[in-house]
Every structure is written in C-alpha cells, then in structure tokens.
Length: 123
Length: 134
Image (cartoon, rainbow over all chains, first blue to last red; front, side):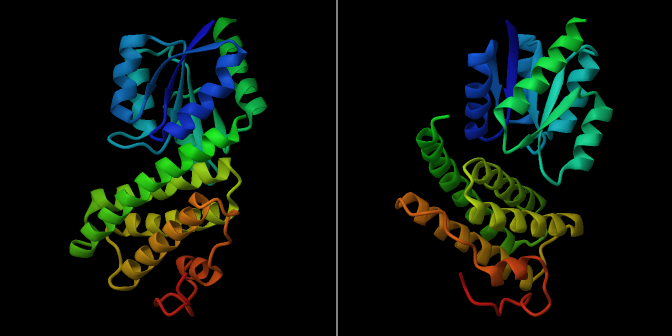
C-alpha cells in the first residue's frame, strides 16, 4: 500500500483527496496545511507520494517542492492545481514535481495520475 | 461522494475564510501596500473558488475567481488601488458573504452580480464602484 502525504490549506480539499484515494488502496499517512508543515512532515513520515497544493500560506507549494527535492531527489510529488495555473504547474514540474491534477477533482483522473506516478516509481 | 458532508465543510471553511478576508481588507484600508494582507485575500478567494467549484456552486466560483484575478493584479502592482480597488474588494467580499449566507440558509446556488463581475474584470464603465451593489 502506497503511503501518501496530503498538503492543502483547505481541510475541505484534504478530506476530498482522502475520500478519493483511501478506498482505492492508498494510505494517507499525514496532512499538512501549509508549505512549511509539508516539508517537516515529509522528513518525519517519509511518504511514497506527496499531493501538493500550489497556493498555500507560509511557503508556496512550488517552494516546498524545491525544499523536498533538495533533501530527497527521489521524492514523488503530484501538484494539485486549478485552471489558470498552467505557468505555475510548469514551474513546479521544472522544480521536480512528477505530475499534476486539476481542481475540481475528478476521482478517476486523480487515481489514474497517482497510479501512473507510482508505477513509474516502481519500474 | 457524500455531498452533504462537503457542503457542511464548505460553509464552515468559507465562513472562516470570509472573516479572515474581512480582517485583511480592514488592514488594507489602513495600508494598501500591506503585502501579507494582499496575499491572504488572494489565498482566501482562491480557496473559496476551489471549494465552490468542487460543489458546482457556479456563481460563487465565478465571483471568487474574478476577485482572485483582480487581487492578483494588486499583488503584481504591490498595492491595492485607492480608492477604486478598495471599493471593489469590499463589494466582492460583501457579495461572497451574501452568497454563502444564501447557501447556509439552504438556498440554491445564487447567481453572481454581473455588474460586479464586470467591474472586477476592469470594465471601464463599471470600474469606479458605480455599478449596482450586490
């Protein structure tokens, strides 16, 4: 079972991701509400995958990707973006994120993306 | 998906966000170049947009999106325009509060004030706070 850390400042979004992925074989090992907390929890929990919002307090999701990748180049991070954030998604991918999903979340698209990232990591 | 659970979460979180936005707007009234307050209003509008879109509250989504875009221009400029920008921020906040209040009372997703949307988009005819209030 793959262990996932969810980072989003809205508990609504964290809950929605949890509800989509937990019944499908992913274990949510932690949640973070800002860009500082996600880096701390990444160190502590060593998840297989991070789902990272872009717009967060204290430190943006992109800065958090850079910090995590600086510590662990193998970290797998999927960005949670919104329509109109294409430039930020590109920046996040350049910073080391693997892939992205777009809000509002479509469960099938979320699961397809996560499985693709996991399969690539395992291959 | 248990929509009732998400509706309750939305009302709770949107209400908190709007209260934070209100405090930040008051701070901006004193200092239009308060970067932290501009960032906060931006994030709150962005977050409300994302939650509302997930629940297909199209009116709230459109207004929050337009507000977010307008605040992004203030962020890029380093300050809120005075007085027009402040007027728009308060009008947007008031309109969002009204729409969330309708949802809290069990109403259907309300339509946004088109004149306000146009003003937030920077339409010259409505950009000076002269449009009909939401």
